[in-house]
Length: 195
Image 1 (cartoon, helix red, strand yellow):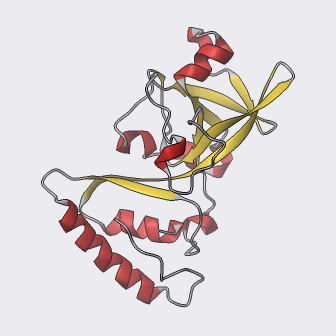
Image 2 (cartoon, one colour):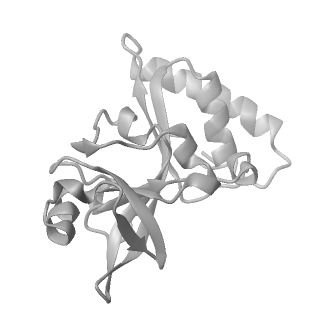
């Protein structure tokens, strides 16, 4: 769904315990004058909690991190922590340069967590084997309400006792109403609503 649709779904849907939204990304990471491309993701503040995976060191993102003015923080993978920082425990609050900008490292994920992997997304970037860096999605207020379809991915965790069929029925109903309500907005109402 569009960002605007996602925020309406998140507010209205009762079938899910948590919902999240993210975009796959590529970052140019500079270290000691050498730059390399790495797989990354721009994620909302529910991303790690929805996947029930939290950093082994430090923290994930809070709501304030996802405000555009506070968005220069990053969570890194375990493998990047080892390869770039020698698994030093003082990595938290150190800087990492992404696309020419400095980001403060606030967390390190466990070794097994590098989502999304290349094969996880139907349109995934073929150059991205796994994700090494996560930064806040940090949408502007205009982007949060946009009804235009983008490259974002939404996912959710079912509430206990709710079947996938119940959740799909609820999402179909909400999306049908949103398609009708925002029919004049730039959107692709013909896209399948797979929930």
